Amino acid sequence: MFDLTFTVDAQDTTTPLTLAIDQMVIAGWTGRDPVARDKHIAELQEMGIAPPASTPIYYRASARRLTQEDSIECTGDDSSGEVEFVLIGWQGRIFVGCGSDHTDRKVEAYNVTVSKQMCDKPIASTLWELEDVIGHWDKMILRSYATIKGERVLYQEGTLDAMLPVSDLIARGFEGGKFPDGCAMFGGTFAAKGGIRPAERFDFELEDPVLKRTIRHGYDVATLPVRG
Image 1 (cartoon, rainbow, N blue to C red):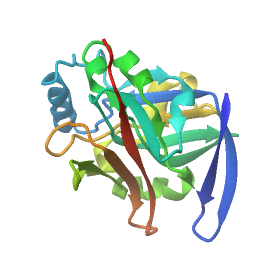
Image 2 (image 1 turned 120 degrees about the vertical axis):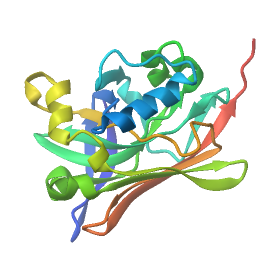
Image 3 (image 1 turned 45 degrees about the vertical axis):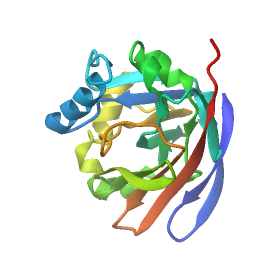
Image 4 (image 1 turned 180 degrees about the horizontal axis):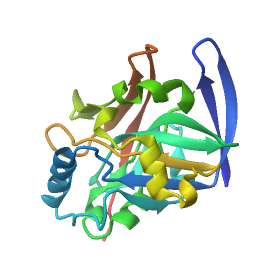
């Protein structure tokens, strides 16, 4: 277990909140539309990554991989980011944030679970109360930008109506359908525009067009050399 400090944005006020995180779950293949879901599966199959055993599927990774830093280090140049909404449980409440499931694609080709453990998972420092946004959940927008060879390009974009509802994700992934305190869960992603590829910087955001606010974060990717 370790602590992360966030700012809870409640529209008319902001409040600092330190949360104890003791588990991280990465939900995969969470698309509501089977056509879009299968497109992402095909995208990864082109890279030699086997299709999932079930959809959705819930991978576990060390909670300490979560980071709010603005840079991460990865071994080799085979990793890339994915924008996702993040749910965090605390004292029976659920908060919504935004993060990047940064993943080593070379490792993913032979073991997805291990690949989820290979890279840090950047997360923005702002959270919203789930109850404040659940009424217009499907209208919210996930978006990411990748800086590749100095050029910043739109990498992913989509509305949450393409994802399974929060209630379904929780019901399928947790005993008794109850989201546990201290759990941070990444909720799935969209296909990359132009295909999955590495970048020297990754920026991501969750936009709420109804309450007119956005959670943002970005990070540089430092590549460590592979020796032998």
